[in-house]
Image (cartoon, rainbow, N blue to C red; front, side):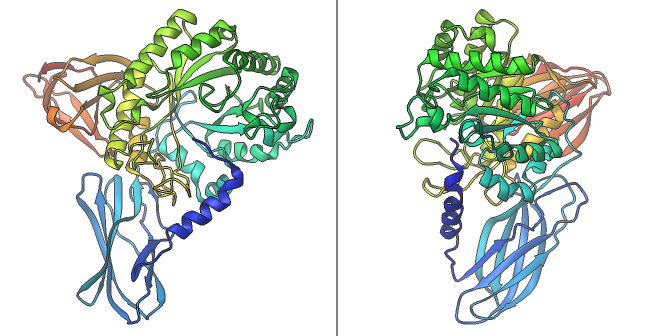
Length: 541
């Protein structure tokens, strides 16, 4: 699901061309517009109004900010006058008095006639106080290994946006072939500059090393030479040792390859075991406490357990520290609670318990698409994407996962596969936030320092998962679908104060009844989080 630097310039050009076909009147947002704000920050929208018709446009441009629930949160308007074939920059300053996600919907009238009317020309995220991101936070995301793309989006704040969202870790595909294009000739700045910028922003990279150079490949004549084992394992060991020496000051984890049970690895499973063994030995000669991650992808046609069995049989298990999965069962038309999404995690946990008890289990790449992406990846819409992101994290943590990384942080342009961009990203191709960006922030604030406590027994297809942060308890509540929503009654202490946080970060305070100590609240598909001094129990459904 990654693609190469060589194609990015063409990708971006084709993407922009595909989106530059103008109707008679168009409005586009400039990327200088406000995107991610704190409460009280002014919102500035810079909109390019283009009049392609042969008559003047004299009327009004208006914007409406619509929240996650579809309610109008703010409006602003300005008179406009644009000659034929000309454009104007229209700057507006709507005011939003609360946190949340807001779609910027634009209407243009020429006199009394509507000539442009489109939802989500832009979007804005107003985030509550920064997420409490501990040094060993469970929250991460894939932060792009395409260096040409990074040169475009990092100056616009991409790394900082990931940190504001609440991510501590950023996985990044790191090609051996680009760092050492010729034997002993290292281009450390190829990735080093981006590692440094991520660290400066507060995001710790987790490189996954892969991509054998042609000169080192055992199959140099094949188009995908980079996916085959090296012709001499000593070459791989030398590269890994040099890489760790270069970055040992900040390097905590090193992932070995990307989805080696897919086409990214063309060697045998025993060869992958050697890849892990040799990398671990080389890395730990330099930094003994460095943690080595192995992984495999899971979806409707890939089962990770046979792969892990073969790698274990080839002797790799003593050499890795973290067992990871890419659980793409989340990307389904059905709700994650009704697919094999949870089964994948349970199976991996069971395998770990047998083969390496105590080792951490992570999900280093999971996602669901907001829109269909070709024929393979099913879009669930931006609302469900945000809802399922929250549920996936809570369910994964409740089953014992120590870290979970959403894929990706950014929806890169894709010139060949409709809808011509990766629709799983938390930021769209123009870097405007999706609702899932805000949902991620809400979860990271609530659970960054929490551990799983217990699950409440509610009604059918209703979930209540209790976590223990340092300051009390946080309970995540939701129903699988609207049909199984309703009211739930929880028992706390009498007169106990309970803070309710919506998926989009809005908060209010509830007070348990003075006589019964109960709180009754509606349950729906969008998760709510209840913070309290004491854990709740279930009184009634």
